[in-house]
Image (cartoon, rainbow, N blue to C red; front, side):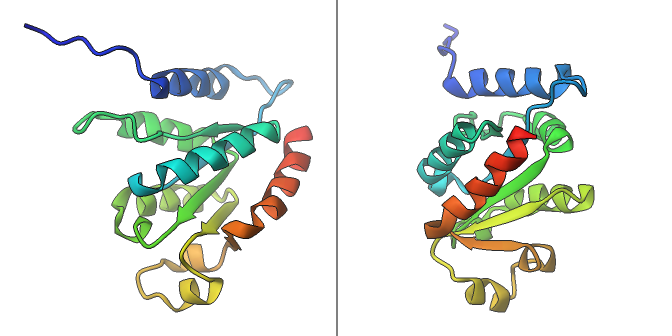
Length: 160
């Protein structure tokens, strides 16, 4: 017997993001924000994604609704290639997630803004941590309590 799973909200998000990312022309640009996070930080990442959306930008978030073993690397790479900025929710758990570093590396190579939202770390902790890449250490390190500072700037960029 074949089990059929009902569609998950993540697929709706992926489809909506893909439409924005692939069917836009220069006359109607929606600011695209890729949000990278650890699976343990999904709830926090969802809250950030909602706040990004409230600013008029379109967030991409996998929402941890992807089945184990599913191959979404190409889809994630396509989104990263279209993203206008990259936000990483940097927590102690994110340090152990290889995808966080791969995604951050793609953003760094594309020269798009990289914003590290810190939870469980201070900027000084990140600067001193040996496993945090220099590309993250030299970016905007914002403690999660100061998220509104980033969102105020994002709101201005999304309105352009």
